[in-house]
Image (cartoon, rainbow, N blue to C red; front, side):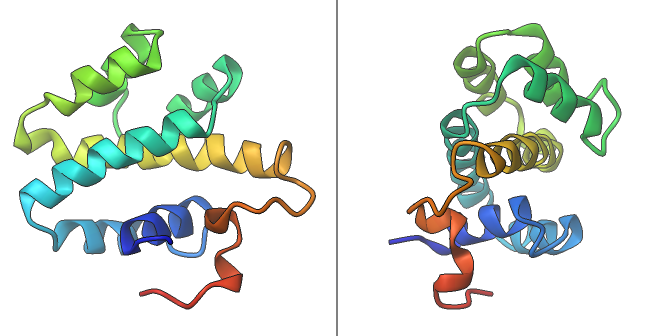
Amino acid sequence: MLTVRDVMINKFAQEKINLEQILDWFGNLEIQTQKKIIRWTGQCLIQSHPTEETFNKAIQLIPLKPTATAIVLLKTYKNLKVALDKIELLPDYEIKKTFITLISVFKIADTERRNTYCKNNCYHDWHNLDNLLNFS
């Protein structure tokens, strides 16, 4: 069963909500919950299986300066798991930019996955949000 966290991240990836809406939701959470969501978003990103080409395209589309720490870490460490481990250790004042970075990359990678691997009626609940109850 999908959680509100799952639905919000995937609504953003599927352009059912915009960046401002997901940031409002994220900003209203306690810092410890935000950190858990950062970790979960990283797991979602891993599960979207981004290719190097997709990953490079996504990094260019992040609506932050390319010097943002999370972006630099993603570029520096070619192993996504290593980069995400480093990202999780960033200080609290980096959390919003980190979230923007991860959801932006996930959005591109997941869109590619939905348009290729999951193109013909996949059974992933998170790709079929319209069939579920409407979460806010």
